[in-house]
Length: 261
Image (tube, rainbow, N blue to C red):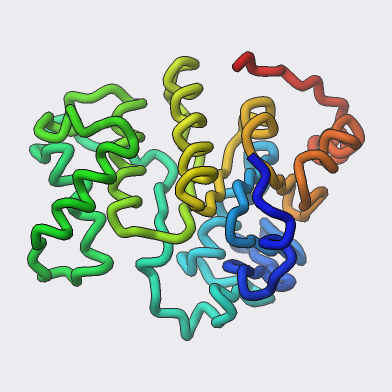
């Protein structure tokens, strides 16, 4: 579902701005002169080959890495001054890669998502517990609340970690390769969940993925990245020049595989 164009054009709805970002690991340049805007209501996909800097860009936007050059602004504030981290939800790559014997229930894992608002030693009250239950219901995992997290499938665990992020009541949700290790049916359900969060709950979503076919059928805006930006705009603009952009992005012709929905 497309967000209203007026939301995309209004500066008051500019949530994340990257200005001339560059970054390198050692002597290896990873990102060069990245300029990027994320507006309220965007469902933005970031695609590119392995090693293209997708996850690095996400970490820069979240302040987990510091750029060599350039600046990131969140809600108009430089990262160094930004303190309202509860406005941001983040599901990192391989969030589900943990010890399967970890003795925490689904509800306990999701409850940890309230810490950003309550503080590390804050006590959960009835309102917090209601938000936790609502987050579980939103992702369709309320029936599993008392199950141990390690006893769930990969797709179910991924939903739990999204619920954990939602429990913090963020305005924007970042997800890094969330469908890795998830089967086709679970992936379909997962993207359906993200679409509902974006269209019904007005959640701004940014997803990093290697799966071009799935992402381009779901998001309303797209970033094509391979150390520098090859495209940043609405999906309709990408599809009009798809073959050209993908050839530049990957350095050779690319055949798209369409996912059935």
